[in-house]
Length: 410
Image 1: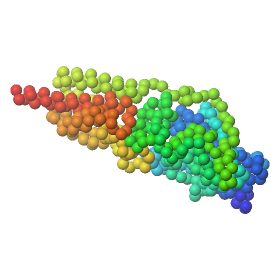
Image 2: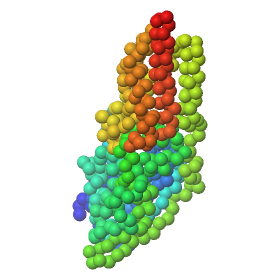
Image 3: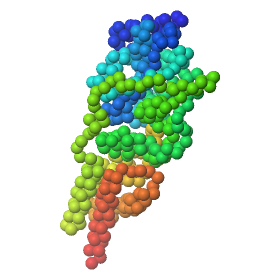
Image 4: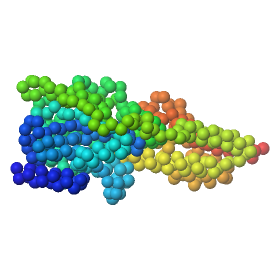
C-alpha cells in the first residue's frame, strides 16, 4: 500500500506541473466500482510517415482522485545515440510514457487528428489488474521495449495488457487465428498509405515476399483501426459463464473536421517519374546508337543509383531485424554489384569493349521481367520502367560492341 500511495503523490505532482513524467511505482486501489474508468483511444492518421497508420493509447480516469492520464506505448527519441542506424537494423527501442489527458488532446487537435474513445466494460477487479499491469510496465526497468512494426507496437501492447487483465475469456466475433482473410501486410500498408505514393513506393521497395503472405485477424490488429473494430464486437465470458461486451460505449473525443484526404501529398508520382526516366533513357540510347556514341554518363548515373538502392535493400534483407523484409526479389534488379563493379563497367563502355557484366545483367533483367507475374512478391508497377532502363543500357553495350567487332572484321 505504501507503494500505491507514493504513486498517487507522484501523479498529483505530474498533473500540477503538466509534466510528461509520471510515478514509477504503484497505483491506488480502486475506491468504488464507479470511481475509475479505463478506455482504449484510437487516433486518426496524420501527414507524416510515422502517423499514417494512426495510434493507440489507454486512458485512465479516477474521478475521486482527479486523475486523468494517458498510457502511451509509442514514445521514441530521435536524439538517442545511433537512432537511424538502430532503426534500419530493426533495433529501435520505444517506451511506455504517461501524459496528461488535456495535453494529449491539445496535441492531437493541433495536428488535426481525430481521437475515438472506447470505454472498456471491465469489473473493478479487472480495472485494478489492468492498472497494475500498466504500472509494472512503467517501471524504469520495464518501460523500454524493442519495437516491432507488425508484431509489437503501440497497438498490440495495449491489446495484450487488456487481454491479460480479463477475468475470464475475451472472445472476438471472428476467428482470430485462421489465415483465410486474403489480406497481407502489404495490403494494409497500401490501405493506410493512400495518397502518400512516395511513402508507399519506399515501403514496397523495402518489403520482401513475406509481406505478401495472408495473415490472420490477430496480426491485422497491428493497425490501430483494426484493433478498434475488433474490440467493438468482442465479448467477455467470465468464469461463471456470464457474457458482457468488452466495450460499453464509444465516442469521438477529439473532433477536428479533417480527414485522410487533407494529409495527402501531391506532386509527381513514382510511376510518372519512372516513365519520364524511361523515355529519356530510351530516346538517348536510340540517339547514341545512331551516332555510334556510348553516352557512358547515362550508365554511370543509372548504375550508381541502382547500386545505392541495392546496398540499402541488401542491408535490410541480410542484416535488419525488421519483419517481412527478407527475402526480397528486387535484389535481382537493384543490388550492390552495380556499385562495386561500376568502375570496371564504365571503363569497358568507354573503350567500346564488351562487358560480360552487362550481358549477364541483360539476361537477369529479361528473366525478371518475363517472370514478373509468377514471382511470389508484389512489386510496385513503377519498378518495371526502371528495370527496363537498366536492361536497355545493358543491351546498348552489346549492340555497340557487336557493331565495332563487325567493323574490325571488315
